Image (cartoon, helix red, strand yellow):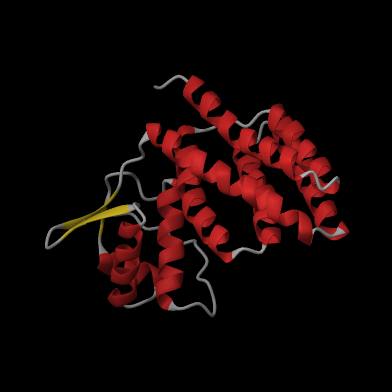
Length: 220
């Protein structure tokens, strides 16, 4: 099992948290491929931790659907199910819409400026056709709003769903379009206007529209 050696080892996190974050990232970005068997000894050596936090991390990853553990046999990375987007995005869209509603009461000029600057970076990435970067910046944009909502339950649920969406997008090379730039701009304006009803609807459609675009991509 090839393990990268050029990764950064997080500081001041528990061994379990560090291992979980790194292994999850490798699964999301395809470093660890769907169906690949994982060796806890190799992972422990690569991450500089004992096998115990590796095993604990793999158990947590299994509970979240990233790996499948077969007792006394093997642990494998789960497959990326293309159709799962139809199950992932509707609840994520609802949570993001609610985040936008809740964020309104916590908005500051600094947050609005940060959203505007982030959307400008997003637009530039799309203009340069750097869709990998655009995807990361799009996630940053939405995370600002989730953070501003200040609801830990929404934060945790979004983080779980977003990880699966990110993996799905990486494996299927989703291309975000100019339409997303315009929707982000509308979201910012509606947040400024404190228009709860409209910002919720635009945010929801921003996510649900992706299902149609995703399904329109030809499957190889």
